[in-house]
Image (cartoon, rainbow, N blue to C red; front, top):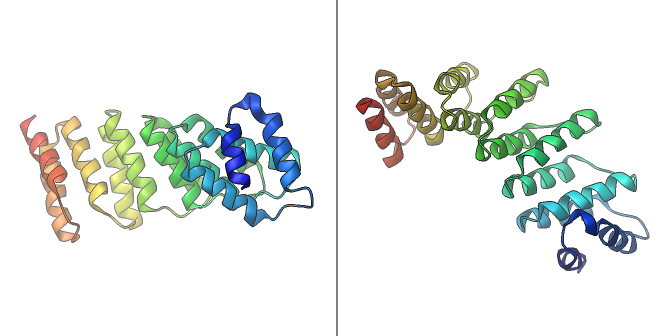
Length: 220
């Protein structure tokens, strides 16, 4: 299959000519955007971000249609491979193109930034979402709060939590866990206990991580 041929070639940049030649041969009579999107999705599942980026580059060079599904697959591949810088570069390309970024695109990149410890980048992306009038979701906010918490930016984490409440975004266990952990950093034990109470009021299930974070906040 084409996927197996691409995986065999490898996704190193120096192998671009071989990859482009393979794609030219496979799609000599034209390319269906849905077919190429499926290939990119399969590459994402294989965590082959290098090959996914090469396939996307081939689309750009050959002037083939690129839509939101193509970008979503490559962003997912980069996120799974912890390549947050590549993911951010793709965001720049998307914002300059006619493809409209949606909630899923932003959430994927913010999650990549969270894994890479890039709290400032995550906050910047939330700002871009707001300016672009893109709907916020739990995943995007959770990842941003977690990035701030892990970066020791407890004030930013709690400020984002307040934004979530104002926007009435769905809260879950991860949202509260990240906010309570931020309270530990900021030595805000009273706020941590308040959040535990809020979880019960919001009917959000707490767990071992929740209680451990709250106890740690009370110890500081």
